[in-house]
Image 1 (cartoon, helix red, strand yellow):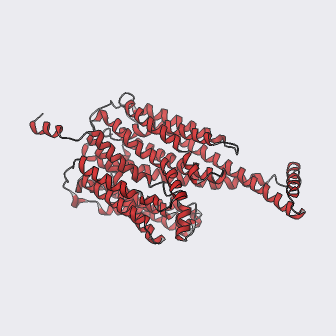
Image 2 (cartoon, one colour; image 1 turned 135 degrees about the horizontal axis):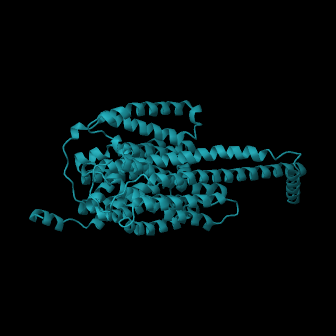
Image 3 (cartoon, rainbow, N blue to C red; image 1 turned 45 degrees about the horizontal axis):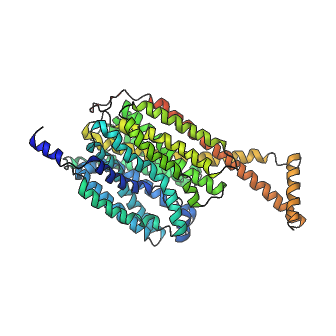
Length: 521
């Protein structure tokens, strides 16, 4: 080692300090993907808009987030990772404050787009900074800390958002990012080393970026709004589906023919990285969809408040944090494929456990189900993140980070869309089947109706009112039962998705812990 190299190594910041700083910033960004979900009714009321219009607060953020991910690799190279990270963090912080001060729905959506653009560039650059800060044999431990931010933040989001909205104002869901963002910027400036800007900024694949961003944006709109707007019965959805399809058809040959594509499709087609990409899509689908489904189920079917529904996820978050540290050490000793298969099996079993829904379940049944997920997800997340860098040369680390995070975001959107679509269709199916038994010739129906009529008569209702109230009560019971059966179908679907990760993990090649990057194949 030369004197210059020894001096550089001596003054290099502690990698764990770097990990803490970038994980804190990433936690804040990922938190904003879910913190606004439980606040949407408050946003709709405060802005005097419909519930459908309020959902664009989430959609615009996801769209902007996905778009900037595709350019993050190039921008990090052109500007330098540290400089680009600070710019993204500053944009995210300022736009968060503006979201909290928005005066109408249009201004809020504009600031959410800016927030998504700033946040979208932070996560992949965080991973790149960690990959460079830690030696290959220690990366698993560094990614464990990063994984706590990515996996726990969506769990904390609903609880924190519900508490702030119930006790303060929905605006504080965004305003809290201000002081945290300023503090994070100061720490990044102090401890993260700059990578020099690289040549080749002029060779940016602008047309490819436009195609990729158009495809991702249109796909996000279709997935997020499809269920609300009745899918292809809506001209709005048809238009964006056609735009997504056309941009995809043009994008594939264009990107494959570029020397420096904005998205390296050859990486996705490779054995190692391709398997990691699709596993991360599945993980994103399960993590984001269950984080949205459980609070929704508890509020609508079990009468929980927004805060209490969010608290159900908290025990799982604590377990996840502990498991991240354990799995970070295991990645240096156990092959990633075996950890991933074990984690996928645990997540599949936790989804199966949720298929035993009925109306008398208590808080801890749902909390335990989230604990099981909290055990399984880290066994997948950390090994797949680590394995995605195996075989990736240093010059393509930023590209790998961007693609893995695109997979997580798109997978999350697909998971939410899939879950909501299955929920709506199966609820209607079960409503129809259960209603078939509600006929005058059905003895059990008549007995139930008569008992309820007698009950309402005992409360002082007239005969006609008692019959009407009894009929309405039976209708509500049918609807509640159909809803629970539909959620059971959704959890069966997610169980199958988790099970599909197991054969995908078998595709991963044998890689020795700490091995140096080799050409991907």
